[in-house]
Length: 97
Image (tube, rainbow, N blue to C red; front, top):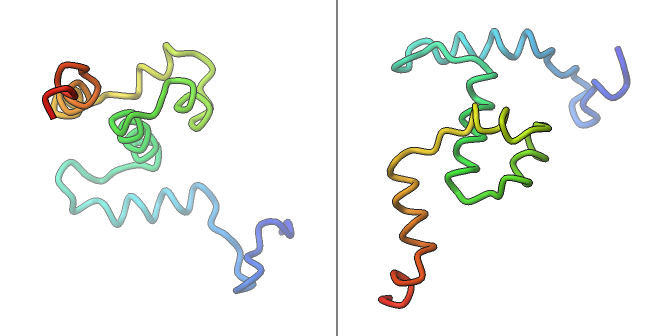
């Protein structure tokens, strides 16, 4: 086992991706729409970051995408988040506050 795979505090080995995925799926199977995968969790994080206003370059860097086309495939902001963003960035709306 590689030294980098051992937690210095506990001395325990970290989980492999496969084992983490198995555990995650088992513990999300009772959720509506579940079970979920780690890949779906990654897409969810990307969407939430986009909804919170992260810029395209920041999202690309954070998630390792090299094209805007692949990024757009996964970031799916909700209608509510688009309305909230528009209200926050609309100059006329800011003047009314």
